[in-house]
Length: 507
Image 1 (tube, rainbow, N blue to C red):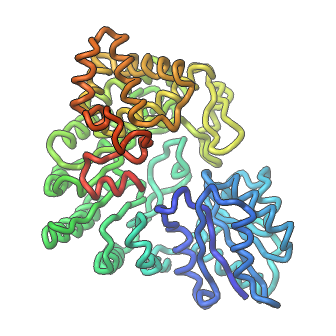
Image 2 (cartoon, rainbow, N blue to C red; image 1 turned 30 degrees about the vertical axis):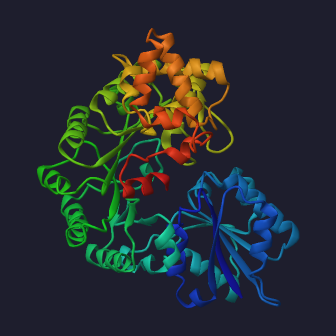
Image 3 (spheres, helix red, strand yellow; image 1 turned 60 degrees about the vertical axis):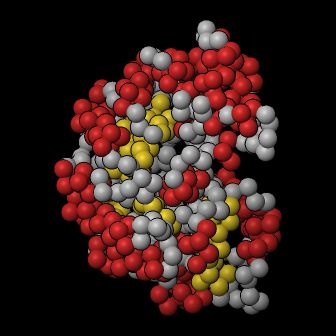
């Protein structure tokens, strides 16, 4: 008998933490369990062929799939093919995409079993029943949440290849006490920490094996300041001991909770070693109240301003367009406010209706219309019609190309002037009208388009050339069409940033 744990990651650099948790907690079945990760875009028949390569003659094969919003379409196709060519293979699904609204999903109809929620102990228990009986009677099984100390940590299962070439996802806690209705963590009752000393011992082991890039998936890293300080001190000790070989740590933080003790620790991190993901989502108090988001906007703004001026942390700040009650005008005001705080990146996201999230309760009152296909992006609501929502989607894409890429650092402030949202929306509308493209725009072409647009706003050709030449995107070598000609933005992104930071942003 073989048990295979598998999923389709968004990129090769993304190593599945969830599958490694399952493997670490298989107990007596671990010796018979293997892990094989694929990447989205692989042909379904090729994936099925590799899966069936694990089958032993005369023995049962159980395949556990990790299903997420970004891979559910492709895994549905894989499961359909697998059941067509090898119906005897037992398929077990788990993951956030199949943990809610289980009655209307084709992938669940095709599978043999589904575990909703936590799978750490429920998956091995289900496998034992399938193999030894009594056979499970139900298709859908609610995952049991064990005490945190009963969960075996999976970090030793990161291979040397993972450590050298992939982002290592880690978590010091699970869950979130906040109830923001667009997030699946709204269903959690609280946050549950792992034993901090046990966790840091695992981080020490990873570090000794060569790990230098750590991405924390905790929803609220700075919820418990005592724990936060202990984790930060772990990384500060490594930086002090080996400044020539620095670590890089990424944390998701609550924007309005930054006490002095935490600030003091943050200030000790040198450039290129610390990144914060900060979810603002909206600066509109009425929208925040509507979606059950508690946030002190003044304190959040003050903290972002402090981080940008008093620390070396790289800030990646999130806004969401399309929330119920948010108009184009109110979103523009929030966007302009955030731009004035000068974070390094503004991640302009479009609302998605994740299965199980409470945001659906506003569907009729605010006429929320979501794409029926993953990732279930909002198409329109009562305040933003479909055509304007499409403009926002394009704005987000071009913002990544121009602003978040870091390639137009000197040009961007001129483009935005005193009304960032309106000015960049005008640029977004113009570039789409003139290219009919939002992807695969080579860097040299994008730089030329930025120059054309600035000239349409009244800037002279000579001044445009000088301004663009002050950025990497417009330097003389690039203008002459050297080795950069035709390169996509993804290849250029982040060349002016520190190595550890570049590694993270590529991942």
